[in-house]
Length: 502
Ligand SMILES: [Cu+2]
Image (cartoon, rainbow, N blue to C red):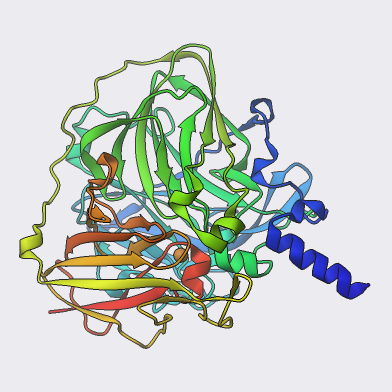
């Protein structure tokens, strides 16, 4: 009897039919919450501008435990930075020196990694920069890159997934003179709004349910509810005719193909590393975990429009057993709602040319490095290996803290070629640098992927080549990471280390 029930639960979890069991607060995201259900006011995270001390900008950050009522009357234990869930938007200026006091009050070791930032490896906040409970980590570095939407999050060895899930993440905006002179919407909280999109799974008592079984370990943890800035089923009341949204896919594993319910056109102005060379008109925007995109959208009076996930054809993204496991993930769902009543302000023309970004020539590349991405499959689609790191690999190796996989020479231009031999997509992220995508299976990437990037989705059976230059910071003893940004894959070994050598 007991055995049967357990097997049923396993089967239910594996087939994605967990909704048959009253284990969770919500059915899956496809349950179809209608526009009228989206009424919770969107939260706008506070800004953290720091203070100037001795010519440096100093930021105080405390990693802490907290509690949220994502659902009325139900307390969810959480974690956050200077708050209950997620953290403030750090504002930093190009050319300034920044110092952070990162105090760990979590009661367990953690780290804070500055995703997308160009900085010395010792300041990077990866698994080698652990902050013990009660300790304060004080990284300092120069802000030395273009205006952009970056972010920060836990990168704790084997615990990145769970710590980010509980809320250890936030945005990091870099400002510069060039972007401020561009006549783009830039009033924070008025016409320049962050949208941190995440999915979470809640138990009936309101607590998060992180990993439950093989399916989560393989696909990554997919939530039953979508949160934007930590709000379930949010509505944002637009007060300006021209809005800039800075979108971060802060989910552990879920990708979103975003579209407005009226299929309106919008303009993407920036990708991970900052402004694109030219704005790109589009109606759909794909963001995989870790990626950012800034878009400008226009609103008329009395609008009521949904931002939705519109799935791409399944076979483009996955194959075989994985496609079967992911099936049912191919339906649309609502992400958030926008309403407008008498919006104000001007609609300015987006400049045709937004920025000049580096062009690195293939002919100048010192080396092409190949990275094979694999998931070891066994039996009925189950993962082999198991334990720490088993199952996911780059060049047939699972991550090890003490092994350096790649040595890069300072000031070299390199091509990194990722080949995905596994049946599901992996968003690959490289620390320290911003790259340009050369090609996807030999073809030029879409227009909105031609700017600076630090995370690129590599689809099943795809080879993606990226090019970059490793500048400024060399340190033979401190590695940077490169890894899949599906955090359950990262925690299970789909990560490697490189050092930059002078
Ligand atoms: Cu992955």
